[in-house]
Length: 134
Image (tube, rainbow, N blue to C red; front, side, top):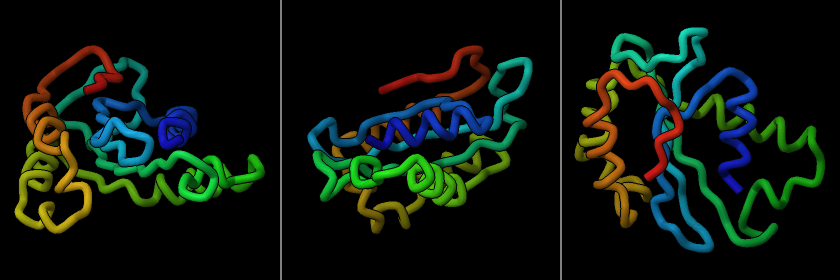
């Protein structure tokens, strides 16, 4: 599952600020905002935030995690996901990106809970906890 990739990214030094299963079904996408870990564990509008979409399926034929047969393959896949994180200098920049009309042309822009995720990201300010799940 895609959440397993988030766990690997956490071990590599990222924290999930907010995440949402956009489909809540046997297959779909998880949208997440991530941030590099800091020793004080506070989210700040002045720290870079990243946006990532992770897909998941119901079996090894349609789920990358389930299809991976070795730890090495899963780590390589996690590295690919890490390289696909789109970074922004502020939450405001990220929100503008998520609200841009270009997102309607992405597959995830049509998902059931996309609007809820974007609204939740837009409402982020200073929080002391990570791992908000919608």
